[in-house]
Amino acid sequence: MIQRIQTLYMILSAAITAGLPFVFFLWKEVGNDTPIFFTSSNLYMILFGLVSLITLISVFIFKKRQMQFVLNRLAMIFNFILLGFFVYRTLSLSGEAEVSEKGIGVFLPAISIVLLVLANRAIKKDEDLVKSVDRLR
Image (cartoon, rainbow, N blue to C red; front, side, top):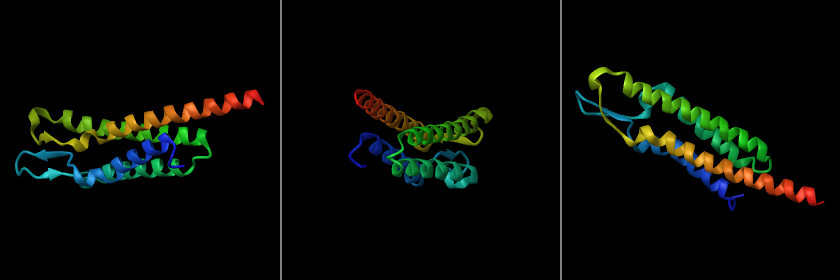
């Protein structure tokens, strides 16, 4: 159901977590000024892949709105975990020893969280509409 706004939000979120980490770097090292992408760590690759997979699964189960809602929340939790790892990585280094410039890739999970929240609001609105129509029958 592409015409539903929550589907568009979820597709955008999946595209952000699946494609944009290849484009935008997470941070640059001071010594050799090379950008560090998410592929430098297996943990980051797994979490980005898991979030995009869960979001894509959620897009295709549009007939089960409650399950869609739960899967979006699960994707949000994984995004928060990923964001926590990024914050820990940037704040745990004393005196900017290794990290000099933060990239926009660090903020990709936050953008994905916002899109998933908007999708969940639209799913909730659809669910309330269906329940109100069921009451009238």
